[in-house]
Image (cartoon, helix red, strand yellow):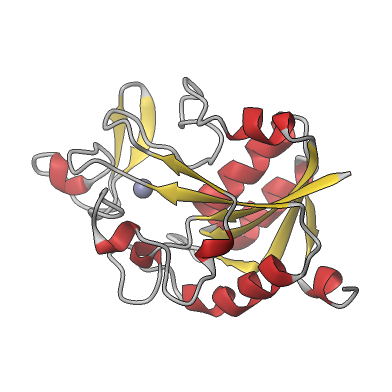
Length: 210
Ligand SMILES: [Zn+2]
């Protein structure tokens, strides 16, 4: 049974000193590297937030709007973010220390300025696939393990889409960190994933048996 590890958005802008820094994000890098090296996974996949500069998820691209406000963007609710992960910038690169040279394939997302993409599988309107599901199915993956940034946005969306796409889906909870716009968002995201059938584990459950 083929197993894939999906490393979600461990990029400079979500880590220490980044434009959209997630608290304690860098703590997950050693665990992620251990999992990459564990030999447990048949393939290592990464998602990469990869926006054009005119992306409409940026508050700066709307007159009179501030970060954190919620707008209607082409019929979808959109949280407005600071400018982050702009194609070609330092912020969009994988964080130093992360063994990104071990990624077998990278799936960029959020490339269309008119729609955001939290999930590594689809944009937020589920209008277009990134090709991730098709790729995993083409190589025979049945189970996906998800970790990364951030629990309450891109990790959650990626795990839920994986489940919907028919993969057995496992979230490695200690290798994720949350944005926590509200303090319980990370915990609530874990609950929401569990209710939808995502299995929640700790990295030790994999690493201690290698
Ligand atoms: Zn983004």
